[in-house]
Amino acid sequence: MKKIGKSQEETMTPAVNRMIYWVIAFFAVALIGFGDSVYLTATHYLGIMPECSVIQGCDIVAMSDYSTIGPLPVSLFGVLFYAFMMAISVAWFDTRKPVFFEYLPFITVPAFLFSMWLIYVMYFVIGALCIYCLLSAATTTILMLFSIKLRSLTSG
Amino acid sequence: MTMKKRVLIWSGFIVLLAIIVLVMVQMVNMDSGALEETIQQESLRTEIPDLLQPRPDDRMKGNPDAAVVVVKYSDFQCPACRFYASFDDQLSTELEDDVLFIYRHFPLRSFPFARLAAQYAEAAGEQGKFWEMHDLIYINQQYWSQGGAEDVFRQFAEMLELDLDQLREDLAHPVLNDRIQSDYESGVELGVNAVPTLFINGNQVRNPNSLDAYRNLINSYLD
Image (tube, rainbow over all chains, first blue to last red; front, side, top):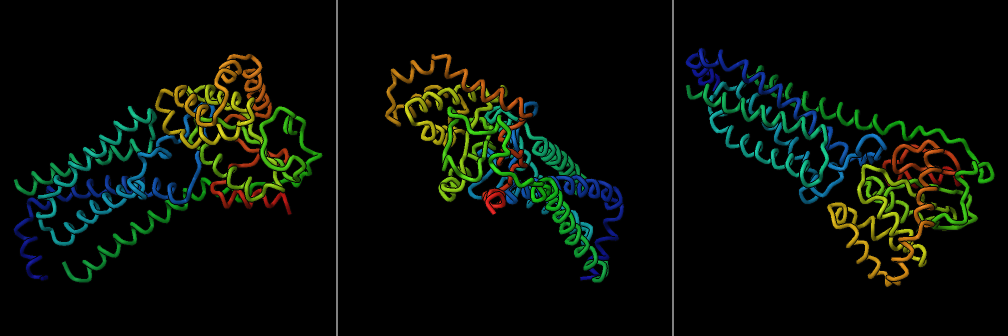
C-alpha cells in the first residue's frame, strides 16, 4: 500500500503542487461552514429561545417549520456535508488520488442548489434573513466553485 | 506516506472536528449561560411595584392570591412568544394554586398582524374567552402570519362559538384599543424593549431557555 501511494505521488507531482493550495483553501472554507452549522445545530438542540426586540427581528428563520426536515434541523445536514467535504480533502492529502475530486461536483452542485432554495424560502416565504444561514450559503457556493476548479485540475 | 503519518493526519482531523464542536457548543451555552445566574432578589408580593401589580382589567390565569405573580409582555406574532405561551400553559396547569400568570400586550410594529391578533383576543375576552382565543392564535401562528390573518381570526371566533355581532362591535370599540395601548405603555415605562419580557414578583428575569429552566425559576420564588 505504501509503495502504491509513493508511485502515485511521484507521477502526480506537478498536478499535486498546483492542487495543494486549492485543497487547503477548500478545506478552510469547509471548516468555516462546519463551525457555522455546528453552532446552528447546537442552538437547535440546546433549545435557545431568541427574543423579538423592538429594533431587531427575532430568529424567525430558526423557529420556522422550514428549519427542520422531519425531526432533524437543516443545519445538521450542513454539519454532515461540511464534515464530508473536509474528509475528502484529508483523504486527498492522505492518498493524493485525484479520484476524490473527480466526482465532487456531483455533491457540491446539488448542495449549492439546495442552499439557494433555502435562501429563497428564507427571504420570500418566511420574509426574514438569518446571518448564519447566509454565511452557510456563501461557503456552500465557494465550495461548489472550488470543487469545479479542483475537478478541472485533476483531469487537466 | 507512512502509516504513522496517515494515522496522524486522520486523528488530527477528528480532533479538530471535536474541538470545533466543543467550542461551538460552549459558545451557545455562554449565550444562554448567564440565565442560570439570574440574580433574584427574593421579594414578596407586597413589594411588587405598582405597574406590575395585577390590575382588575388584566388578563390572568391561576390563583389571584398566589405567592408568585408572573407578568408577561408578549406579542402574538413573535415566534419566541409562541414557545412561552406553551410554557405558561403547561406551568399554569402544574402550579395553578401557586402562581398567577398575567398576559399583557406588547405588539411590535415589525409584526403586521400582532395588533390585530391582540384585538381579536381582547374581543374574545369580552365574551369570557380570552385564553381560548389566545391559545388558538398562538398554536396557529405560523399559519396566519403568512397572510389572511383576519379571516383566520374570524374562523377562530366561530370555532369558539362567540357572538359574532357582539365581536364586531367590541372590535370597533375604542376601549379595546385603549386597553392594548395601556398595556403597551406600561411596558414601555418598565423598560420593555423585547418580547417576551417576564417579570416575576416585580423582578425582570432573563428568559429561561427551556420549560425546566422556567419551572425552576418559578420554584425558586416559591421556596
